[in-house]
Image: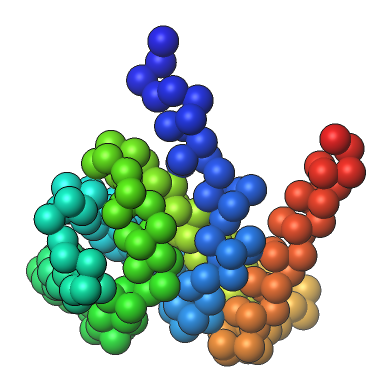
Amino acid sequence: MGLLSKKDANLILDPLADNNPITIQVLGICSALAITAELKASVVMALSVVFVLGLGNVVISLMRNIIPSKIRIIVQLVVVATLVIIVDQVLKAFAYELSKTLAVFVGLIITNCIIMGRFEAFALGNGPWKSFLDGIGNALGYGVILIIVGFFRELLGSGSLFGIKVLGDPIARTGLYATGYENNGFMILPPAALIVVGLIIWVQRSRNQALIEEN
């Protein structure tokens, strides 16, 4: 028998595709629009949410039987705020320049509807292990979309990935730029993120509909 049962594995796999928090539940759209102009920022935000949601779900699950229902939202906010502060301090220590870019958006993790939603819908009613898997699964589902959007926005908008020019030098007109190619400045603007996310949602839901019709 493997480490994970089929039901446990589905807690991780379902949010990656069939029940993705962005493409299916349409949650967390704001950060997908705000921080995906660069792939590096998208990856860091994705990893931050994995840490906060995975560990936060475990903490809430462990406390679920002692949290008074009238103050459960306050307790959840305290837990997620504490974890976000840890993330912010780690970024400042090891990636200071990036931390300045993401400072406002890392703080907004506290009110990320995906995180609060998983606390309410899952961690308060399940054990620590299942809550951990649910948190990791939903955070990965969220992060995958951020990374896909960040990949296309930086590549098409700046001709780079992780800040490294991969299409050539636009000033010296080398690489792809020698053929007359120009960076699409629109891709680094927030409306472009909405278009890319919309296309991903369309592809995801078309796929799901096709599977339903086959069955």
